[in-house]
Image 1 (tube, rainbow, N blue to C red):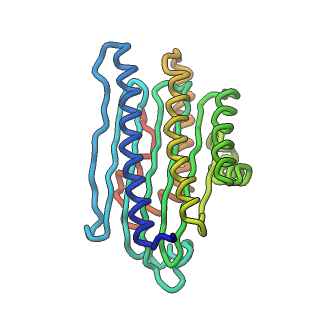
Image 2: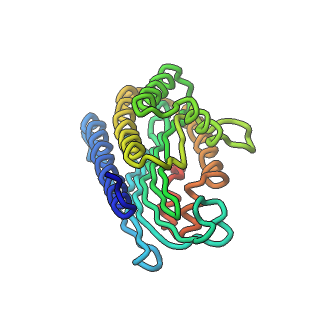
Length: 280
């Protein structure tokens, strides 16, 4: 049975919100594990709820954890909004030729690690509705240091996920490599991952893929972190991580589509920029 548009919206947005809470639980569990070893109080997420200028147009909530034993900063943002695209922006969005109206919901996660040997991790999935509707999203990793085994591990997990959902890993990987490329520096932001957009047609199969990508990111994040949780690092390695973070900021401010979408749809400024790494 084909689901109508309103049912699709409801199911997708509830999944994104559920995944947000699950990610918070798992990341706080990791923080407790690290804090217990040092016999200190663990860092926890702080929650912020926001609404658009007209509350009838929706809003969202984000959780932010700072200065932890694992995370220098990790933000997990969920939103469900509607409205009208600005004239100078709607031409970039499919299905807005006859009407600039939209509905959108999604989740985005950006984790910047305290230990420079653990890569920064990014994930997002979204469902957007204009006169058309589609899923988009992806995940990628940005290490400060090369680790071939870790890179293989991440990409193999994503390859298997794509294969089990009959998605083309090679195309999604290439799209990710092209997207997360810092043009003015002529270098990639990190080791890539997968990136996809405009998944139309079979809503149920695409939603299954989006759900399983969220679960994959949750499990993969824990595995990557646990493998290096108690590795030692030095000041030089932390300094190199700051250099990588500076480039991360450059990409997000100059090229990131999610940042531009949020700014052009009246999103919450703090939620939009939670992806930026801390300066400590």
